Length: 103
Image (tube, rainbow, N blue to C red; front, side, top):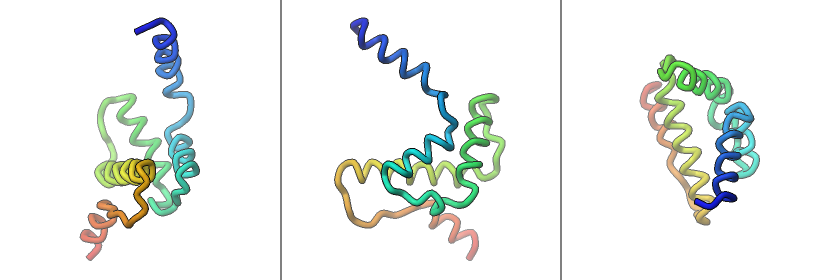
């Protein structure tokens, strides 16, 4: 790796925790015109709690972690589909999971 590429890579690593994860999610929602409220009113709060739990203790302490993981997976899938130009309907597995639990 040449020195310029190494310096760019090091700068990106140093900036990883520059913003809270909730702010990073908000930026993604804005950039891709996604509705943050679609993922639940406490999604961003849970994002911070789960990230802090993993980052500081290496363990998930939240009972809601699985639902959160599914939501993040769906957000990533939606962004990838937008980036490749897909404009059709998508499935959101976390909605199916929570619908099964409430019925």
